[in-house]
Length: 242
Image (cartoon, rainbow, N blue to C red; front, side, top):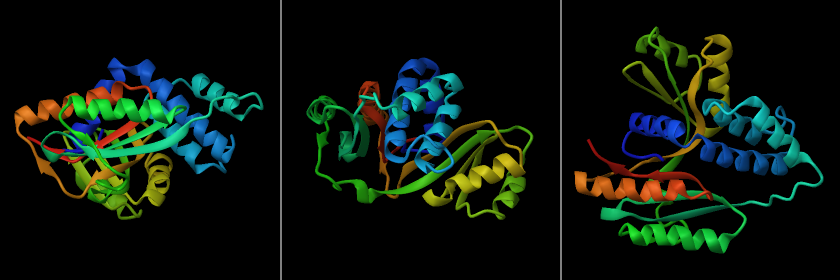
């Protein structure tokens, strides 16, 4: 999920981690499998695998679990065959929604995603129907009650980070996608920040749709339906509310 505010997004994600940890682990395992099949099991030479393992660690996925997935995906007998598919559409009140999926049955996933949009008063659109309302960015989030905003900002001047947001000891750093791991490595190795809530590539809205409390409930209902689906990996939207 991504949309109305980065801080709300992080809170939503952490709440979901606690409530749906097993489902999240299954989805991360699928991402690991796809990354290994694309670029091999060597973490050093496979940037996609490095990135998804950052997500695994941020979600407290046990090391044994993701190492087993890597080994299985790299084996000659691996049978999992997932396809990356993106769906785009409009939710309640014209809110733009992007849904990234990994599926072994495109027809099933398309039918399910379409039904969720319809059920919540939205409609599934064509490819690139809403993608222009978002931009691809790297996001790093962590909490630390010992750091000041000006201190972290000074650190980031040494990197190629693009933006810093701070709220109640929560720090969110935005980067270009290709600079994400560079900035994360700097924070971890130079500044000894090792407990990250999020390290990933996301789709940030460039235009927002203001929604009232009634529409907010409908948008959240659509997001919850989508995120409950095992084929759905990420949901992004451009709704904004107080």
